[in-house]
Image: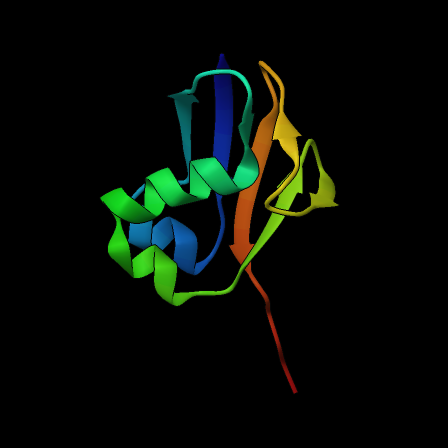
Length: 79
């Protein structure tokens, strides 16, 4: 199955792109994709990531479907 992964903020800096398409075996979870990316880009594991699937907040245990859009970003704070 194919999953479109979007990166925002520091996640884009770590990965080096803002978007990529990954092929994964079914079934897979958002957490599995994040683990795969963290193995390729270890600095990603140093951040608490927020997850959205198809523009809805989700958690790492959410099962992905073919064609889903997985967005990864870090919490933003201001003052």
